[in-house]
Image (cartoon, rainbow, N blue to C red; front, side):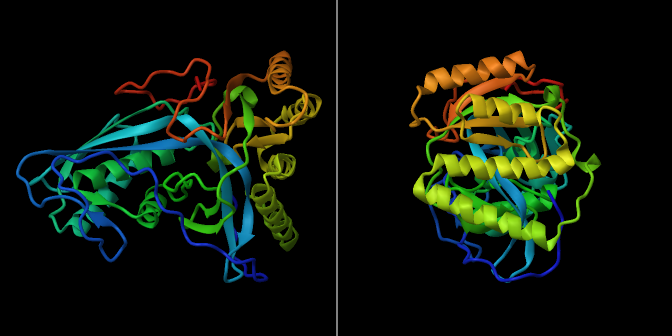
Length: 381
């Protein structure tokens, strides 16, 4: 993710944020939807209770980005932004037990190494207590999940959003997506747009706002997932910072226009070209040694292009399911070539799947109460 602050020419029109389609599960006790607050959140709880109250939340992850760079907002201001590729299956689940009468700083987190989720819980307690008209209180947050760490799949954002939803659930509050995004950015400085519904958006990850809704849905894609660099986690803080020039911004804006056109017309080939161009620009920083091999395999197997995590090691080869030549044969040829070149394959999935639904995958690890966050060289996907 690239920092930039200079002003430039005015962009194309922007669109409002997308409604949230994946709020947390039920609170105990609740009585149904109540009035909306000034922030757009909805209060559903019954009021003060004396005993513990449990809330739950869930958030999916993603499979890296289709496009990431520096764009122009409605005021012509440079703004880092990204378009994620949704992924069904892996995600984070959170359970927050609110203990009325305890001080709000008395928060415990299991596992204890989820620092961003702990910050999100503290921020969410303050916000949700105010929305519900209740005193803030402490409690215990328990996280489980199966999102690999350090590969650029949004593991920390998934934890943070699941946490915010669980806390909101425990207070009987349904937070608006903009509020969830604001809390997520405050907790981890930059957030993926996992709090929004499935519509493809250009999202300002450091500001928590939608720059543009690019269309109603991504066109159908089949994706062969893999990991570069042997699956070693990427330390984003150690990556060199590239100066973004006006030429760079113009190129990102050009790719933005092409991606909007590809999504609007269902043109998978054009979408693949945009994703490949974005991934290639990211190699100025990431320098994946297998990148040229990956793109060559994509060409030989009849793929539309490739996509990567611009802050990680996960990657995907993008196929148009409707293209001639037999999808199954093309996917098999791609996986065989990746394996032959020592690029580990992970899962094959499509964009038709719900972000909270199943995906066909190899060796997913089951969720456990104490799922480790220790990065491994090749986590099971």
